[in-house]
Amino acid sequence: MSTGKPYISTSFSYETMEETLDVPPQSTSLFIGIPKEEAFQENRIAISPEAAAVLVSNGHRVVVEHKAGEGAHFSDKDYSEAGAKIAYDKKEIFNCDLLIKSAPVSDLELELLKPNQTIISPIHLPVMRQHILERMMEKRITALSFENLKDDSGHNPIVRSMSEIAGSAVMLIASQYLGSTSTGRGVLLGGISGIPPTKVIIIGAGIVGEYAARTALAVGASVKIFDNNVYKLKRLQNNVGARLWTSVIEPKILAKQLKTCDVAVGALSSAGGRTPIVVTEEMVSVMRRGSVIVDVSIDGGGCFETSEVTSHEQPVIVKYGVQHYCVPNIPSGFARTASQAISNVLMPLLLEIGDEGGLEKLVWHKFNIRAGIYMFKGALTNIHLSQRFQLKYTDLNLLIASQR
Image (cartoon, rainbow, N blue to C red):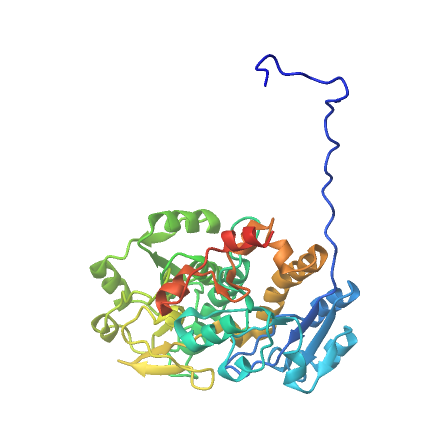
């Protein structure tokens, strides 16, 4: 064979290939089921009648279980007028391709789940149980959690909304229990001419702390905020737009301030696991009789040593003469507002899922939604859940890439 110069035939034509056009996604009609929540103290519903009307008008089918919106004061009539179908059998709801829940999957609902279903719901990490995850994995479920769902700006919109509600509600709750009609001190939350303002201590400078501070300042209370994250304290001051009394959590300073306060709010959050206890029983024992503790962080175990979980039926326990309000899931007590806030996040997401032809296709290019997916077609994709229950972890990005 000759090793000379390569022979180039004139019959070859070297032209650029035509551009491969991006084919627009084929939209799909979603079949959405909204069950009635049986979970303790869960009054919220994840899709409001107004949102259901938008989904139906965009060609999606929405099935709502009888009395599902009752806790948030939405009637079956509201949903049927919005174009949703009312189902009287829970099995009919669980026959839908896409389930939208405002509470985690329960033991009773496990058997009703159908294979390859998609679920959008909270996880509630502290109370999640292994057998529920394993059963969902067996059924090849795809699951998206409220807590980890991120928007385009990288924030958690549902968590933020619930924190805003809890923060604003804290001061309304505290003012109720400070009054003489309960076992309170008979003090008006805030300040009026000639009388020193009520003193409020807030431990935690996150979203809950910020909204609690805003509400307390609006009624004229004196506000002092503690947090070990100086950046959060700076951000809170900038957001509120006023100079506030702030401090890192130093036990002696905290104890001194608690001794003379009227309201103490626990608004610390934990990245994973239990909320740290920063107020000891000894500190609580020297607080004023009739003062109020509202421990919002009770969802993660509470940051007051004397905190114990209470219910909406019996919201307060008294220890050392101090009233402790430790109801988990405070937004559920303001269920209509909370439902509308959740609905405002989920409705546009569902429309996007429909336009893209399903969740699996949307996550291919919508990276922020990947943060919320903790199970993808039966594979556990949340590292915290896999470590906690010693279950196999699969990287979601690799899974999605392998689908193509």
